[in-house]
Image (cartoon, rainbow, N blue to C red; front, side, top):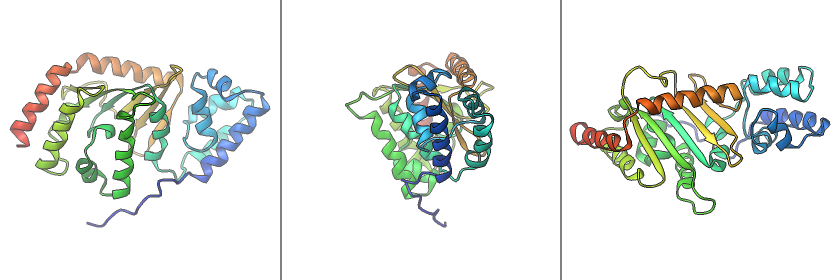
Length: 266
């Protein structure tokens, strides 16, 4: 099997930097700090800062709100279409800065185990790229850090993930046993029954920052998208409530995972 090209883990898209420079120009012209601009949405000032240095991309809805707030007269909307929409920017690099600063992460995964919970072998079976696997494993360091405290992590997995073959029996057995072990380490893992539910449209993560603002990451068929619009975040919060209501309890989830390991992957 041909190896995928190695990614440069330090790459930041110049088009996102260019867009961020314009955001900073209009913000400063209005005499707003990053925190004061963020309050208008609301999002954290650090999220505005990440846009301004090109470390994250905003949605078109966010750009439209931003344009109105800083009186850019459509400039930031046009630039978003030219510079951000199709930026040559790795989606896996978009989210980690927010993930590292979050005090709580709530996720739903439809197709595979959440990245922060993956074993190296499971990740390699998915990515087939040593650099990408190393980057994913490095992200998991936030769960073991001492200062600041690790974020509270709550992950709901669609039940089909437990039986979907990723890498073979040995890889799956190790991965599911890892899920059981992680339950006691500031992680809450629940399984959502394989039926019609509010997560069928795709996986997503909701990050709660130290200032209680919320930022979301949604996976689509084309690309992963970071978003902070109040309407988008509210809809995802509602979906989390609905999914949690239909999920197995933590104890039931552990029992189900053990059963699948014994009956399918042993």
